[in-house]
Length: 418
Image (tube, rainbow, N blue to C red; front, side, top):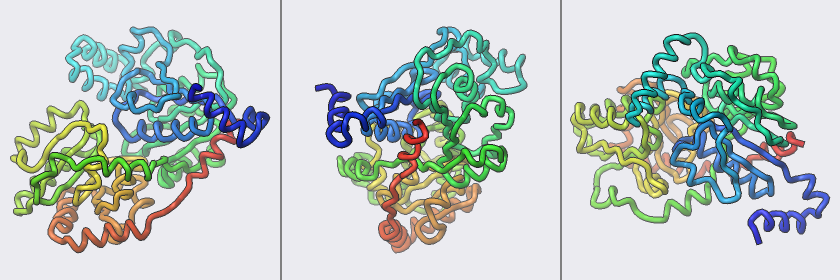
């Protein structure tokens, strides 16, 4: 029996045939790609939940690219947004800076020159919209719910409005607008088609409705789904080789090697900690276009013996569970899923004061929330390195304050699509 048929049989048994027809929906999510990142991880968890509820789920990417494609659960359809190959190749996904950095990383110098030239002659506006939209065909399938899962993609904002037919259209907000300097007001003409905006934190919602108050009644909070039980099971799978025979404090940071994650800051902090004579080993899980640049900075700072870029791990959770301190040095976030994952495993956390963090931690009670200065971050980490009782206190507080919150917004998401 096929997986889809099993879901149908289960729903028929539980609700009856008439109710089955009422519940099941055809849902499509549009994303830029499926990189190893928080937005993509959140989509995988949401798609899995909706699929297990019996819905027909599709993930549609601008480009079929990224490590997390292989993490998409069976039963979820994967496809690319239909467009000519040449348009896709030269579409600057993520903006010119990110697209150029990736082209250089892939040694595609013709594409690099083209993207820079295109940006120079179209310097005003959004780079992702510097294409001939007339060459993008209408999506031939119709959906109950169509979701732009990343409002920070101008292409997807316009694509949802012009090229997609659905009973309801939703848009997800995963990042802030101030630190990213993303002028959402410039895209207002494409947003009136949206029936509901979902923000992953209260702070993001407050900022969004402050910028576009006319959408206040159509905006709500939808915290990312984090599969706590699955994380804890995977955390017991093995003990990391890198941690073996290591009696020093183990610090962990997880995230793509991109500017947003503030790794330049982390490297300078590590240098400060080492200069103070503190003993630690700082491990970074993630990959990205800044790998070589960061590796050179590590050498330049003289911290090759205590700061390591380990790349991607298919199962990162044993690294979380067995670290002594989890550190997040991001310059901006929406609702840092990695912090949520560290909380799920009761790790002492030091994080910069990005959006959504104060909805997860209480500074000085169950974690450390810092400014964006290297000295403040170094002082907070140094305090935890030196004080094992403080680390134990934070771990115990996270254990005692654990929430059993159920994300009831998913039920409302499905009802909105009726």
